[in-house]
Length: 409
Image (cartoon, rainbow, N blue to C red; front, side, top):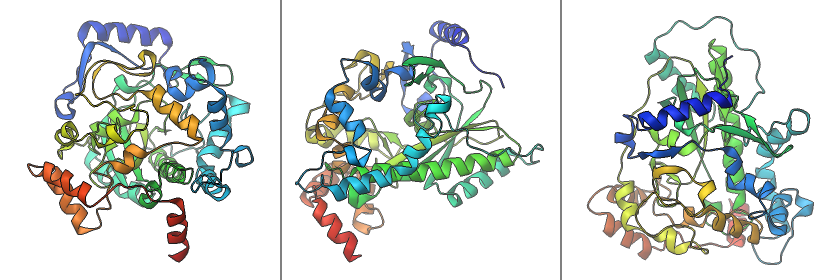
C-alpha cells in the first residue's frame, strides 16, 4: 500500500502552488480557490487545539470533554441540562465514543475522529467483473440498505485531504495513512433527529448529533466492508482524514450554507457526514444547485441567532477569523470557530442553534414545508423566508416538551 510521506506532500503542494489549485468541478460547486490555498493540517482543528493550544484550552473546555462521561457532567436544575438529558446525550454518543476509544491507548488511533477505521474483515481476493455503471447502481442500492439516508460519489480530490493526522496521545503530527492512488470518494449523510434539534441549546439536543454519528458509523463500516467484499480497497472515514463538506458538495449531496454547513435538499443542514475512499470503478455524481447560495445571500437568520456572533453577516470572502483553524485561499463564508467552541465549552454541550433556525431545517414530509423549500429555490425565496418567520419555524422548544412528546408517542 503506497502512502504519501510528508516530503511528498510538500512537493505536491509546492507544485500545486505553481500550477494552481483550481479544478473543473469548481465551476459546478462554486468553489473559488486561489494560489494562496494550502491544505489543512488536522492539528489545527478546533477540537484538537482544545487539547494542546493554551489559547483555546481552558478549565471549561476540559469539563466539556469530561461531560461525555456522565458522572463527570455538571447537571443543572434547568430543563435540558438535567441528569436525564445528559444520560440520553451520552447514550446517543456511545457507539461513536466506543469505536473512537477502542484503539486509542494501544495503537494511538482515535478512529472516526482522528484516524480512519481499521475494524474490517479481509475482503475478497477476486475482483467482481462489472462495469462502473453497474458498480455505481449496486453501490447506491446497497448503501441505502446498509443505513445511509443519502449517498453520492465524487472523484478523489487531494485538496480536501489533511496534510497530517494528529496524535492526542503524543500531541504531535502523524503521517497521513490514506493510500495515494484511490480514485473515488463515496460520501454518505444521515439525518439528525428534527424534534431533538428543536430544543437547542440543551444537552438533550446533543443526542441528535451523537445519534447521527452513530448511524453514520454503522452505515460507513458496512458499506466499506461491502466494497472490500467486491475485491476492491476501501477506507472508511468519519471526521478524520479529509474535510467532509467539500467532498459532499462535489458528490452532489447539497450546497454550502452561510453557517458553514452542508445544506441538503432532504434534511437541510440537519445531517452528519461520512465518506469512503476507494478504487472501485464508479461514476461520479454531478454537483447540484437548488438555490441555497442565493437564499443564504439574503438570509442572515443563523448570523442573528448565534449568541456569540460567530457566523458572518457579510458576503463570502477570503478573510479568516482565526488564521490557523480555517482554510487559506478559499472564498467562502467562514465561521469564527474559536468563538463557537468557547460557547460550547461555556454551556457544557454542543450547540446547533444555527441548524435549528435555518429555513432549510424543515420536515419535508409535510406538504407546506415542501412548498416553502421549492419557493426558496426560485424568485419566491423572499416570500418563503417571510412566511417561515410568520409561521415561527425554528423557535426553541423546551426539553420538557420533547420528553413529554417522546413518552406520549
